[in-house]
Image 1 (tube, rainbow, N blue to C red):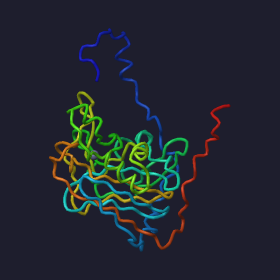
Image 2: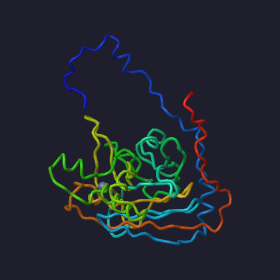
Image 3: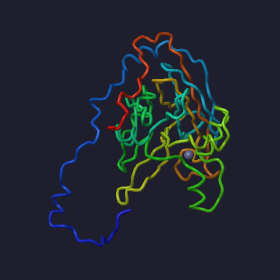
Image 4: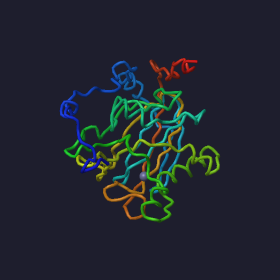
Length: 285
Ligand SMILES: [Zn+2]
């Protein structure tokens, strides 16, 4: 946080420096645009071939072949989910929340892509429907589906309150990933990464710019749907914070399951799997 009483005097040009116009770092106009019209056509008639039921305070993994749709669905009660994404055939390629944030903003919705890490950097999935798109941004600057937060984890919890809690999203995802890919917990843990916070309502405080959360507006029946752009594996944790209106990293909050429904299109017309990034890769040597 910035000092309330700075130790250094501002230069005389300080006001001019502060009022210089802002420039969006990464204008997205030049990016390949999501084919939402084509996705809508492909989604029509797609059939539900699998459903993953994620219990409260646990996580699960499910494979989503390229061109298939994954619907993350709220059931029973308000619940936040922490989402990881891996390339099914190469788990070194995984979701890159930081670059997704830099490109699409702090909170994502329909039409945004979920990008993979370097050197792969391509859309792993595209958001094709979001029933919470009505929320927009509230007066506190809060919104849903953030790519700001990291995931609740037992290490931060241990530092902050001195306790060992085992059902943080980091641990839930570690166990689920170990079971899905047949890894040891130690190996799996190294592949758990910063998440997309599905349904979570978050922002930054106006005064200190600290990360905040509020109770999620998600209700049973709400969903966000993704079209896989390559073969992906989703890992989803039903956060121990429940709707994250009060606290996380404990067994205090009321928690509910989440489902992931997989839909297979009968017609893949117009769908092209995302290509690997075309950067030449030699870093100037
Ligand atoms: Zn969590």
